[in-house]
Image (tube, rainbow, N blue to C red; front, top):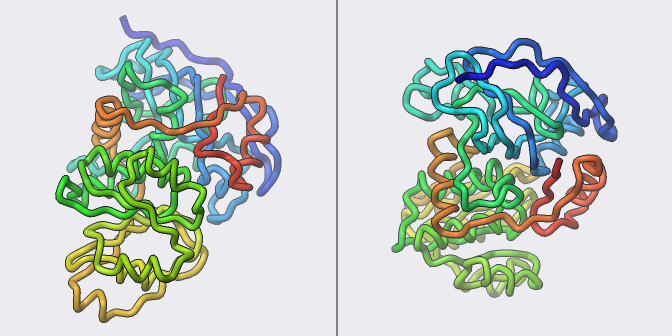
Length: 341
């Protein structure tokens, strides 16, 4: 039987001005829409995108709002037209909560490219709360074998690295470099290994070498070592840059093999400047990638379950979200912070 109860109030932690602390906040979600599910939240990851939204770095935050878009929880109510989820299902919700469903991108299963895509915590309240409502298609069933704490960061960080590896055809013959071994990169290493590729970790932190090798890297390159960077010229079919810092972009492009691609998923503060000739002469490419579609999320969680991919996490009670955010801002978390209810 379908449940259609309404939660009278949802309680969470909201920010009321750019850069402000999170404070307790409640709101009435209104009627449960026919295509929605209500989810009782058990875990929510702290993504750097939440911090950008809190601080209004991107210029479109509207206050007050509850951040959070790496959500795991249990379905507690379903709308009258929902056929694909049931009360009691454990689901994950990522960056996106809805899309138009009828545009060319939605029709071909690329809902994340929909011009009317609705982010989970932009213009609406997100996952630093006890519950949330989203379109049922964006509440993805979580395989039983995966632990909620380790799966929460996969719903944004994980799909952000999984999608480009998949969409650029990484396979066992591929030589892959992962630039930056942090919240995104440590998952990139694991997924690249799951694809069967030969994997190189590139990092400015020499102290991460042992961990990178444990997480699936076959090789480690210290990117502060100019000699080491020169040695890897012409090495990679695919390079995934996960860092939000400026890099020696020309050296990274030079590390690509002919027909190789560098894909950028971290946002550096300055424009990326490179020479055109190495792109033209080697038929190389530079691309970008956002998160992924519900289809991609389903597939990624299945791959994670079968290959043992999991986020390395540090847990905080939901009430200590401000403490978690402060640690993430200072890059003191290895590798993802997760809030728990």
